[in-house]
Length: 230
Image (cartoon, rainbow, N blue to C red):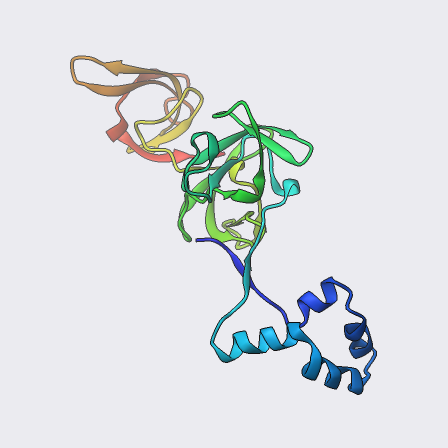
C-alpha cells in the first residue's frame, strides 16, 4: 500500500506565495472575501469538494532515509530497463541523490521506490547490530518516512532500518556460531553445518556450553528447543 497525505487547505496558495494569501494570513477579512469571489484556484477546489473529489499526494521517499543494503520495492509498472511494480531491489551505492541497485548498473531516482516491507505487524524479527550481535524484537509497522518501528521486550519502541531486520531463523537454517538450546536444556554452539545424504537432512556438529561444557556431538534440527539471539 502506498502512503498518501491529504491536501491541506490553501496549501497551493502558500506554496506559490500568493499575495492575497499573505493578506489573509495577516488577518485581512476583505482579502478572504476577494479570494472566495474571484480566485480561480478557490473555485476549482470548491468544485472538487462539491463533487466528492479528494486531493492526495504520495509520500516520497527521501535519499536521507536510504542506506546501502536496504531493500526497496518498485512502485511503477513496466518501469524502464526491466523493473516492474512490486520488484524488490537491493541498494548497492548511493550517489548524490540517486541510488545504484545490485540488480542494475544504472543509477535511479528513489521517488518511484519505497522500503520493501516483508513483515506483518506483530511479527517477531531479528535486529542485527554493528557489533554482530542480534536481538529478537517485535515489528510494529512503519513511519510515514518508511522506517520500521520495533518494540523490545521491555516495551521500549524505536525506529530502525530494514537492512538491520531479518526474519527469525528456522531450525534447519542455522549457521556456524549460532547458539541453541536442546530439549534437555543444554546450551550449545554450532561448529559445523552439513547435509546427511542418507537421511536427506541437515545435521549440526555442536559444542556444549552449559551442562556438557566442552563436549561435542551431532544434533538434528528437530532436537532444537530454542534458538538463542544475542
